[in-house]
Image 1: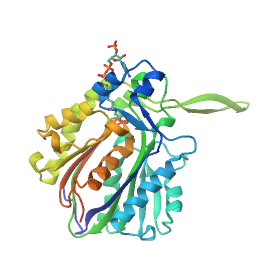
Image 2 (image 1 turned 120 degrees about the vertical axis):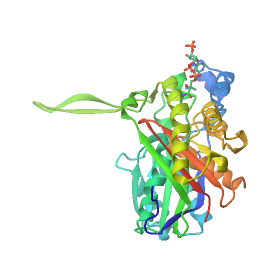
Image 3 (image 1 turned 90 degrees about the horizontal axis):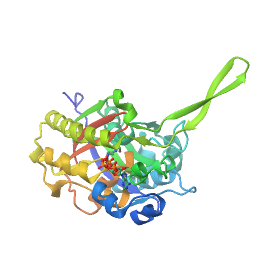
Image 4 (image 1 turned 45 degrees about the vertical axis):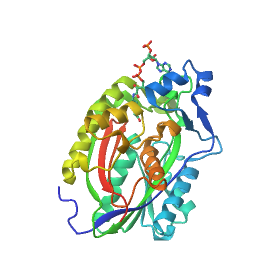
Length: 334
Ligand code: UT7
């Protein structure tokens, strides 16, 4: 695959993240549903998650994450040409990207939402990169943000222990050297029913003979076992494909950065790829599964802790509802 036909490459020059202040730990969850800290910790690795209250909005955490990413990259909101917001939980179903554009004061940027559930950040990274590679835009803000707590069934122990709220962001900039080394994206709608946040309509006759479907979205429903099986099989495959396209071997990967769904999935994928545990970035103990936010949240923490150094190779992969999955291989920094 020729990635860089015009000689324009991509640099990821800044990251930022934000989570709501309120936390819910496993002990508190065990007061709500029949579960235990021991079950949640051993089956998932999750200990606590951050949750937005009714005052909190997706816009608020996404804007904060974006401001931090802009500051790290050293560019002003007015320098942005494009804002892509990967989310499944917008404040406004028509899209929340424009609201974030306004709150940042990014007056020159066009902004839109992109929905690919927990794969949203990787899909967004590839989408945003196309605008840079074609020479159209130079400075792009990519945000992955979700407030899944709005759509969790808090009486369903098989799902409510998993999810949390958060936002992460990166700045992508045009440069000569291409630091997005390769990618591979996949979808399989035949498995859509494994993980859904489905609209349910009720018939409403608005005038004789004309019926419309008015309703709302049902809480998240998941076949955990099926999604687990899908993840441990498909994620190593898609990373291998992206590594192949990047002309990079698994040994050359400095950091494995997976969607933070379950520590057992992280461990199984690393093992399949023969990537050692020290190279696996994991912060799900403190945030749970934050959907489109999980990859940029873990990336930002690792960058700020000084773990990830400029030039290091990161193999990122997202997976989730759709079903969707995908991997992007990139070098951090310029
Ligand atoms: O971002 C989207 C991607 N989503 C995912 O990656 C989720 C993938 N799936 C998973 O991570 C795992 O399947 C889960 C963590 C959701 C579940 O773990 P599991 O090891 O597959 O458990 P299970 O569903 O097979 O359930 C085992 C038992 C069941 O009881 P029985 O039938 O053996 O008596 C469940 O009813 O554990 C029970 N169980 C619980 N027990 C205590 C299910 N949830 C809980 C709970 N606390 N919260």
